[in-house]
Amino acid sequence: MYDYIVVGGGSGGSVVASRLSENPDHTVCLLEAGGPDKSILIHVPLGMAAMLPRKINNWAFETVPQKGLNGRKGYQPRGKTLGGSSSINAMLYVRGHKWDYDHWASLGNEGWSYDDVLPLFKKAENNERGGDDFHGSGGPLNVADLRSPMGINNTFLEAARQLQLPMNDDFNGATQEGVGYYQTTQKNGERWSAAKGYLTPNLDRQNLDVITKAPATKIIIEGKRAVGIQFKHNGKIKEIRARKEIILAGGAFATPQLLLLSGIGAAKDIQPHGIEVVHELPGVGENLQDHIDYVSAYRSPSKETMGISLGGAVDIFKAIGQWRKERTGMLTSTAAETGAFLKSDPNLEIPDYQLHFVIGMLDDHARKTNLGYGFSCHACVLRPKSRGTVKLNSANPSDAPRIDPNFLDHEDDVQVLLKGVKEMERILRAPAFEGIRGKALYEMDLDSDEAIIEMLRNRADTVYHPVGSCKMGTDEMAVVDPQLKVRGLEGLRIADASIMPTLIGGNTNAPTIMIGEKAAEMISTDAQQQLEMA
Image (cartoon, rainbow, N blue to C red; front, top):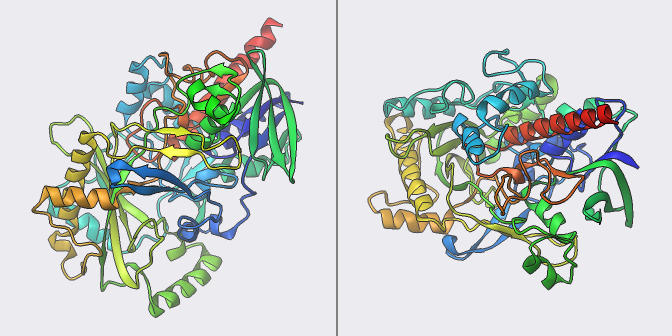
């Protein structure tokens, strides 16, 4: 019996388990479906290039065929280890725009405005540049500048200057718009995941148990209260119980899947699988949102890029020695080192698309390899209007969830992506890239919007930011209230990206860590109030 059970050791769950166990009077159990974060591929930043396209610390999900992508299935890599996707992602520290959180508050989510959440971002952060009005110092999540950025980034920045685009050296500061370097969740040239920052230093706490390779299979409900978790461990079905609360933090796919497997959701989504409806909650698995993204890739003669060749193999061999000795060099790269937040229309209040410039040729999530050197650039729609779902494929907890992002269903998403890709190509074809830019992997006719849109439908896919499938709110489709409590049930909260009512304008790891911080504060406050009333 524990006071708190946290289901999922990713970006939200690592934070919640760590913060709750700071109080020695709280007993906490963290269940993680994946293994421990021991792999060298996790801690060497560029190791993500090996994990992203394969089932290495990665669930490697697929979507259902996407009508908006000409019937193609999308790819959905998700972290399968302590730290969750923060252990396999590109480590970019991005919070989104002030507007995003003020928008959440305007939807009825009291306590979630930018002014409300900024202190939580700062509490989590240890920015190596130092603390200021926008950044924290001394928090568990280390944020650093790149140690060994590749020279090709300067070409990207110069190309943007040639087009009179604004520069920005801090996407999380006073202004988001502009072109510049990303900061990263790294420390001393190593990945600094949520697990590394929040769990690893605290694994010796007597009141914290972390159980890995323990996928949850069911939430145990008695009356209208969540009292325990059923999970699989070492080939056996086991059960643990919670005195106070259970916190779900499996992410935008696993959290709605577990709720539905437990009979919590819409009857139409549960009963066809032979599962008894325990609590009718129609919003479970609805409202899925993700950043639809297109990648342009070019070959290049420049050795300031990464490539697959005999020379590239020698470079990697040298880089291994450099990383082992100094924690510098190519292996500290995030691959996407510079980027931009830009507007598809100058009259817009805030940026509506994002660029990630990549120092190698990226093709189909690195699942296709191309010999030679080159570079790539992503363009993604920051606030898509398309809405998808996460449902069950079967009543078997071991089966993957049924993921349908419904990409490019809304025409506005198509138009924003079209404009973003055209501007991205303007940058990549600017004079700064002359002599560096070779042949495109996929030629694009920039004079024909129809041809570009067809290319988008044939090649666009996620940039790995699914959210919203258990949204926070006060309407009938909300799954949790602004306190992150599951509506209509006691003792059950959610603390992951699934609670986002709308997708934020940027990468989602830092916001999910913030959600974990806020959840832990609210849970601790409630516990203290109950203690005072006892």
